[in-house]
Image 1 (cartoon, helix red, strand yellow):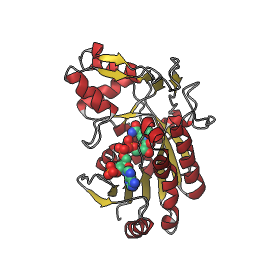
Image 2 (spheres, helix red, strand yellow; image 1 turned 135 degrees about the horizontal axis):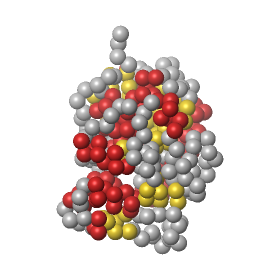
Image 3 (cartoon, helix red, strand yellow; image 1 turned 90 degrees about the vertical axis):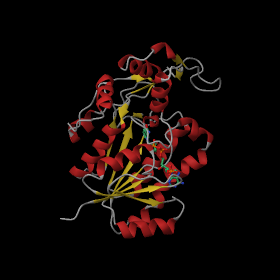
Image 4 (cartoon, helix red, strand yellow; image 1 turned 60 degrees about the vertical axis):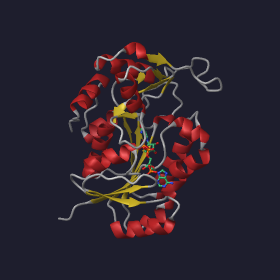
Length: 301
Ligand SMILES: NC(=O)c1ccc[n+]([C@@H]2O[C@H](COP(=O)([O-])OP(=O)(O)OC[C@H]3O[C@@H](n4cnc5c(N)ncnc54)[C@H](OP(=O)(O)O)[C@@H]3O)[C@@H](O)[C@H]2O)c1
């Protein structure tokens, strides 16, 4: 039997590079890069721009992927606020550019959304809670989700909590900065104003693997860990676990014009129970995730 083929759009990014590493053990994996040529053993990397419709058509015709995983665009709220047009282009218009070219083969389309689609008032959000964004990021992600739901016959939307794990050496993640600052005795500023159910990037890769294996279709699923903390508390716990100096973690003050300027705390944590039950993945406490990152090993169930 021939191996299933998977196309990772955004394969040179943080999630994409971890995913390529995970999936290339069981699938024929193709991954795209835009401005950073990248390589992962067992994965074929292809240059790609979401604007080049002719090239998209050609790639999809040649690869005929069973699954497309869409990972374009940055998850940094600040970047999205500064570049709303580009963000909209990558997060919500981009998936639509692929529709006609993939019509013939009808691959499963996996889109990665985030918790900013919710208002952050109550936390522990379930998949079918009311969507009420209070940021540009949240509005753009809802648009992206709607494009995917309305145009693809076979889709899965994963709303992922912020992820941590080793970066791929291209851009530094929150976690990379945290590790580097604390291990070199430098201060690290972290916000106390947002609470999240942070999850590991390897855990998300495992979840996607299961979705493909089990043939899940037309579902919205949450992903995150069990522990709910702010970035500040996350950094403190990291320092404690790795015997680094917690006093280097300093509370970041919100910008004057931000919604957090009046010491508001918003809880964007996600409830991942349906994903755990459906996919038999293991939800982890923050300290368990730190232990696994330490061992560089994430269990599959
Ligand atoms: N990271 C998280 O914690 C998290 C959590 C929830 C949801 N998500 C979502 O997951 C997705 C990926 O996140 P990430 O952290 O992996 O982002 P990332 O590291 O910034 O990667 C973004 C990817 O998009 C590619 N790209 C950028 N502009 C492009 C263009 N014009 N045409 C084609 N490709 C382009 C980049 O390629 P080059 O680098 O080669 O230019 C890179 O491969 C985002 O949609 C994000 O909102 C992420």
